[in-house]
Length: 372
Image: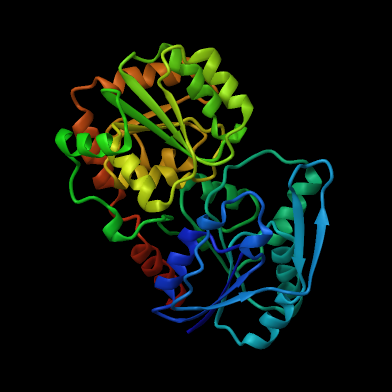
């Protein structure tokens, strides 16, 4: 079976998935952009270990800059047309539909009556103006089928004309089976890692992501003033700006908020395992892979009702869902869970819930649909 998968750039979790999928089929992956063409990611974040699939960086591009949106550019790669026309693929999967290249490919395939699939990492049904909605529906509604990771994403696709019986679930993840702890760590095991990392506080809360407004780290910093005095807060990610430094000086009167620069997967794993829980105060995430990764390391989760991974994977048995944009609710949730006698039970439930969210199961669920 020959499969073409179109995606934006070599994200690490996607490349791992492609390497697993490529063991089961003849897979070609077309990347719209090279890592060096991205200006919002550390180069070390990308994964260029293309083992079991043919990787193609699309050329013959035209780039459009949007002046009123900082760092935003739109890229259309006309070479996707030739690849589709000459590739003789059994299945073509588009990792999204909203880029210019994807829309160009869809328009060509609709004109030539070539079936295509759409896969999304997530989505939330939203009100759009009539013209935008009509355009989205044009590109989405005519797909042969859809791969969706969650119920909110299903509803999003259905709002754009997708038939319910053509939507298939897959467990979106950034984990292999070996990434998931067999059991939660003991207090002594955590203490060894904390000593190595220089963590002095009795209890540790970790948060991970880019320092951008959407992730809500400003809310977590503001909440620190109301969080128990023996709790350390470690926010890990790239893009720390003066805004966050100023907020820390204003609200963190006990010097318990720590900014940690970007860490590799193995380094980040140590921070997860040294911590007592993850707080991810996002204002909006169509998924939120940090939830998967923290659960795989045995952490209870606090996140918002605008995080789809949280809505899919978190409930009262392994954490807490709180309203968006509320620093007081963040503080209350952390204070409640961090002293809970059931913290270990919540951690065990996170491990249990995340077991099926692996690359292997992603591949199996894709092939089950495509072969059928």
